Amino acid sequence: MAFAKRIAVRRSPRHKPSQPAGSSDARAAALEAPTGHERRLAAALLAWFAAARRTLPWRETYDPYAVWIAEIMLQQTQVDTALPYYRRWMERFPSVAAVADAPLESVLKAWEGLGYYSRARNLHRAAHALVESHGGRIPGGLDALRALPGIGAYSAGAIASIAFNQPVPLVDGNVSRILSRLLALDCDVRQPQGRALVWSAAERLVSGALHSGGQPRDCNEALMELGALVCRPRAPQCLLCPWQADCRARQLGDPEAFPRRPVRKARPVRRGVMLLAQCPAQPSGPAWLVRRRPPRGVWGGLWEFPWVERQADEESAAALCAALLAEAGEPAAGEPATPLGHISHGLTHFQLELDCLLLVLPGARSTSAEPGHPLRWATSGDLAALPLARLSHKALALLSRHRNGAPADASAQGWNLGKRLPTG
Ligand code: SF4
Image (tube, rainbow, N blue to C red; front, side, top):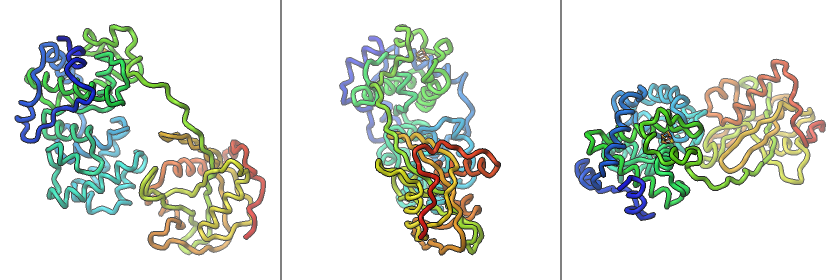
């Protein structure tokens, strides 16, 4: 029976990959024997991988700690972007214990710029759990892995198969895309039915690899590598693909039509103002007003220049700046704010558009750097040491342009920028 038909016929939408407890041999025995077609697909994939695989640091030893860090970094992030972060991380935190011993702020600083900061917060929590329950070692079992913060089905499959060579499948965005094309799946692979079909297909390939004399880790890494190098989201390189003769999407003439996606709604736009308030006469030198974000949510635990969203009926940036200063316990200034420019930032569920204003506050100001207080004054040295949210790096780039004499960006449409801040 052909691969696609077998997957569709034998697997119910609720199918989950086989995950028996016990040894690697027990797991292998629990896998359904592959058909000849599945073996051939797996063998072709493994042969392609043997020739095309990139040399990557975590592939040198398959050390579980290295694989764990790499797999978490590679979620939502391309290999080329993640590599320098990975190298710096392994120097700064060479072991699970080193992560657990570090303050969260150091972990966030090492992650600064990679985005999706819940990954870093979960790594920190998981390191504590590993030290407390596993003697600082990474477990090889799927259940033990999934009990750790930040480790879902994909990460558990990646660590179990790549670090421990367990015969378990894994499915990430790359794998979903390739298999939806290979099988021309006419359903949304992010929904339960489509997801079950893809997981089932990935499991069949692991079984095919085992029966072809291959290794589970090579099969899974080969799938991800094929997605990164050949079966890319745009313009897949089908002529280089080991499955070009079997791929149904290619036979249909439009591989990019897969995976099927529902029409996306436009993201709502939210607007606001960010304030770069500088006080030249702080006791430790010129300093900037920054605040720490709440521990959870977007940029959780990172520092930023304060910003507020604009409500529909607000037109005055000056009034919002005054509100931010009041929050910091600062009297409002009589100086006009200088428009620095505009920041656009896309998040998963909305688009953020911020106008960025510079305000120099005269005189010495009280500091609000009490422990745990979300607002504080930060010198340039402090700014370099604190984990800063991406928005604030964009604001610093605008400030640098301004100081280099670039004309102020007049894109702060709709704001009443000419008004002075009301005097306190
Ligand atoms: Fe992807 Fe093309 Fe290979 Fe099909 S033949 S799996 S579309 S690269």
